[in-house]
Length: 121
Length: 110
Image (cartoon, rainbow over the protein chains, first blue to last red):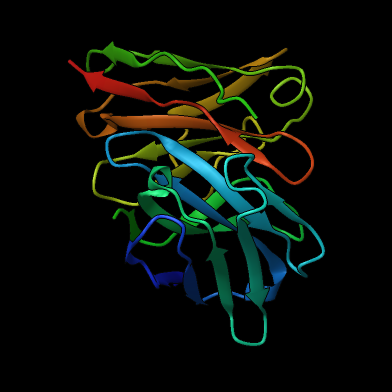
């Protein structure tokens, strides 16, 4: 069974940093692209960032480009999102998600339960 | 990266069919056959129900179907059931390793 467990969320002041982690299990982690997707409470889903299976390709939403950095450690089955210069509008539930297609990207077939990040003074 | 456009709401009676549209541009929906659809019940993790425009992941009933024409993708839910009531989101690959979501459609089963 695929399991994705996010950690590292919490309350942080504007301008500060936070690092989210996602522990993956139940599948061959290094075969799949991974993504971070967020949802502001009461609003829609927003794709934040994605990374391919070997870290050779990374992508970011314009809203976080230059502030967030995605990375993965295939040896530890772990995905991370380093979030710097946080803004109140980054407040959201952040989901770690696994792509459905081996060595490609087609959509997210497994999601974690999400971790809340609150940016406020 | 502009959000894809979905109607905010849709509805249908049990047993009926409903279609939800998702309009993008020639830089996302119109340029790639990488459109996916998600069903999201509040308080739960989103569930992938369609990927690559019209493919269903294992376990998703064939009542859910997807299509695309030009810059617009569509999700059809046939034989509506009470449990289908949820928020539905489309998503498209937008090039340069990026994805974009739609604003979401709240489906009500009357």
